[in-house]
Length: 498
Image 1 (cartoon, one colour):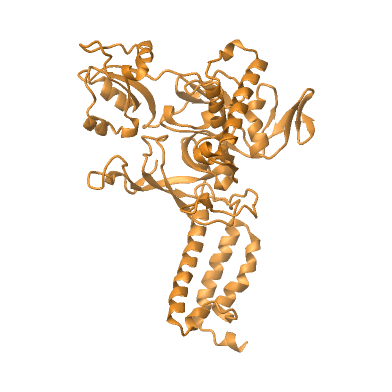
Image 2 (cartoon, rainbow, N blue to C red; image 1 turned 90 degrees about the vertical axis):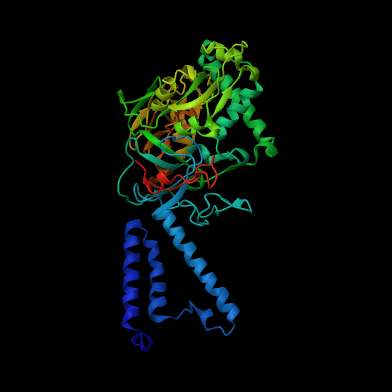
């Protein structure tokens, strides 16, 4: 009691401020388990029974120096850990799926409070490392304990056309050498590669289609699992340790969505297209090559400047698509495969001195690649659906036709056992023909529509996968340029994300 009487007024004020902030934090996250920390806060400022800074009294200057650094690093790691979980985190755009809305090399501040931060599934983890520690190449988290999904109240909800950062839903199982791809899609592609002869799925019965798709998937899966040196070890990850993706939300819970000739319709109404919407085109010139300065003016990166030549074996493909202009030597004029916005398309097509013909990239056979991969729908990236997006509390009647669409939600995301038997569908051992969803789901797509692996390929994004909302580009680096030739995109620094 005498020790408490000696405590200064300043220490009491500090303790009061810290205690009030901490209690407000517990009220926000609704985690009363955190009350066990209160005695330690009181001791750190008032009673001081625990020697929190014992090293400061050491007579050894080396100990004092080292421990001061350890103290600062531990404090910084704890601060970063809580800021990353509950407030915001940095995110770098790795791919061109959202060009020209967000560019490869953009560094973003992602707000966690916009939609409400999640309490982490894996609380014991290193900050600033999503799932792998650099250099040592080991897991950055300890799998136990794992907490169930809980989201703290945020400033709002996901809205139509919001750009959203989320954990890759199909990233629960990954081959480590192919982490950016859905394992199921990878297995299907590898299986199809083993059976290169194309099958006309439309000519087959539903049962025959199922057999062919199962053949592709099982053959690809076996190949991946038996070749870890090529594909990497196959592992599973908890929700919050899956890869972070960023896409645009084009469908909300309860919406019915379809795509007709590249135009998204929600509840039978065409949605507003983003300004940076892109599609792939085949651009044939008048015989010359497109200058690099012209590509820079258009904003087309080196990675996107792909050429299709007759010598490269593309002759039949180009002729099939009407790109038959030839030079005086009888060779097909150069053809570029480019992603273009409407404005870029108009710029190129209007330059008759440079281009002779521009056609949109034709559709290819996508059997076993378009979601759901275990059902032949005849859908493709430009013409898809209609598909209903599940909402929390909604009940659907399960049929043989819609089960492949929703079985991943039921089985993987909402953790039920699901079996198809001769006499019907069984969920958690009970025969049923209905299901009530426990979570809301979203439909996410990239603005670079022909260069985006999105919901058209791996399906719905569950609410527990939503990470946050990008609010600002704080740095943007052009990988095609050097530091003294325009690498920093100054016009994008501290630019708000619309």
